[in-house]
Length: 98
Image (tube, rainbow, N blue to C red; front, side, top):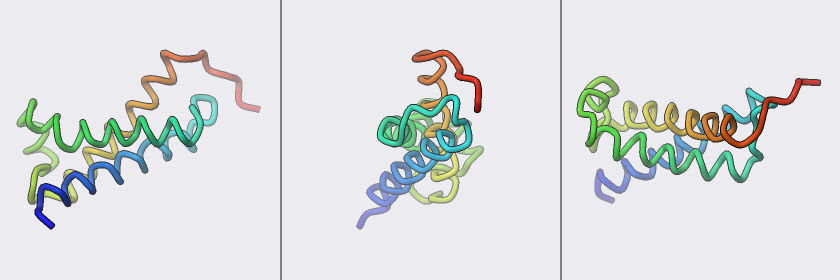
Protein backbone atom coordinates (compact mmCIF):
# COMPACT_ATOMS: atom_id res chain seq x y z
CA UNK A 1 0.00 0.00 0.00
CA UNK A 2 1.17 3.47 -0.76
CA UNK A 3 1.53 6.05 2.01
CA UNK A 4 -1.23 8.15 0.42
CA UNK A 5 -3.75 5.29 0.68
CA UNK A 6 -2.75 4.62 4.28
CA UNK A 7 -3.12 8.33 5.01
CA UNK A 8 -6.67 8.31 3.61
CA UNK A 9 -7.55 5.21 5.63
CA UNK A 10 -6.23 6.82 8.81
CA UNK A 11 -8.20 10.00 8.05
CA UNK A 12 -11.46 8.17 7.48
CA UNK A 13 -11.16 5.93 10.54
CA UNK A 14 -10.16 8.81 12.82
CA UNK A 15 -12.92 11.03 11.45
CA UNK A 16 -15.57 8.36 11.92
CA UNK A 17 -14.37 7.75 15.46
CA UNK A 18 -14.38 11.48 16.20
CA UNK A 19 -17.96 11.81 14.95
CA UNK A 20 -19.13 8.96 17.16
CA UNK A 21 -17.24 10.21 20.20
CA UNK A 22 -18.86 13.64 20.04
CA UNK A 23 -22.27 11.97 19.61
CA UNK A 24 -21.68 9.80 22.67
CA UNK A 25 -20.40 12.67 24.80
CA UNK A 26 -23.12 15.15 23.88
CA UNK A 27 -26.35 13.16 24.13
CA UNK A 28 -28.50 16.24 23.51
CA UNK A 29 -26.66 16.88 20.21
CA UNK A 30 -26.48 13.26 19.03
CA UNK A 31 -27.62 12.82 15.42
CA UNK A 32 -27.66 9.03 15.62
CA UNK A 33 -24.84 6.58 15.01
CA UNK A 34 -25.21 6.45 11.22
CA UNK A 35 -25.27 10.21 10.62
CA UNK A 36 -22.52 10.80 13.18
CA UNK A 37 -20.35 8.23 11.40
CA UNK A 38 -21.02 9.56 7.89
CA UNK A 39 -20.39 13.17 8.92
CA UNK A 40 -17.29 12.06 10.83
CA UNK A 41 -15.98 10.25 7.73
CA UNK A 42 -16.56 13.35 5.60
CA UNK A 43 -14.96 15.57 8.23
CA UNK A 44 -12.05 13.19 8.63
CA UNK A 45 -11.40 13.14 4.91
CA UNK A 46 -11.57 16.92 4.75
CA UNK A 47 -9.56 17.41 7.90
CA UNK A 48 -6.78 14.99 7.13
CA UNK A 49 -6.41 15.38 3.40
CA UNK A 50 -7.91 18.63 2.13
CA UNK A 51 -7.30 21.16 4.92
CA UNK A 52 -3.52 20.65 5.10
CA UNK A 53 -3.38 21.32 1.36
CA UNK A 54 -5.47 24.47 1.64
CA UNK A 55 -3.93 25.72 4.88
CA UNK A 56 -0.31 24.54 5.06
CA UNK A 57 0.07 25.79 8.64
CA UNK A 58 -2.43 23.14 9.80
CA UNK A 59 -0.40 20.40 8.16
CA UNK A 60 2.77 21.71 9.80
CA UNK A 61 1.09 22.13 13.18
CA UNK A 62 -0.23 18.59 13.33
CA UNK A 63 2.43 16.94 11.19
CA UNK A 64 -0.26 15.87 8.73
CA UNK A 65 0.56 14.64 5.26
CA UNK A 66 1.79 11.42 3.73
CA UNK A 67 4.35 10.67 6.45
CA UNK A 68 2.65 12.14 9.53
CA UNK A 69 0.03 9.49 10.19
CA UNK A 70 -0.40 10.40 13.88
CA UNK A 71 -0.85 14.10 13.14
CA UNK A 72 -3.11 13.24 10.25
CA UNK A 73 -5.25 11.11 12.57
CA UNK A 74 -5.46 13.83 15.21
CA UNK A 75 -6.49 16.51 12.73
CA UNK A 76 -9.00 14.13 11.12
CA UNK A 77 -10.53 13.21 14.48
CA UNK A 78 -10.90 16.88 15.45
CA UNK A 79 -12.59 17.87 12.20
CA UNK A 80 -14.56 14.61 12.20
CA UNK A 81 -15.92 15.55 15.63
CA UNK A 82 -16.61 19.16 14.70
CA UNK A 83 -18.67 18.47 11.59
CA UNK A 84 -21.45 16.46 13.33
CA UNK A 85 -21.46 19.03 16.13
CA UNK A 86 -21.92 21.91 13.69
CA UNK A 87 -24.65 20.05 11.80
CA UNK A 88 -26.44 19.27 15.08
CA UNK A 89 -26.56 22.97 15.91
CA UNK A 90 -28.02 23.72 12.49
CA UNK A 91 -30.44 20.79 12.46
CA UNK A 92 -32.24 20.84 15.80
CA UNK A 93 -32.38 22.75 19.07
CA UNK A 94 -30.72 21.30 22.15
CA UNK A 95 -32.87 18.92 24.19
CA UNK A 96 -32.69 19.04 27.98
CA UNK A 97 -30.70 16.06 29.24
CA UNK A 98 -32.85 13.74 31.32
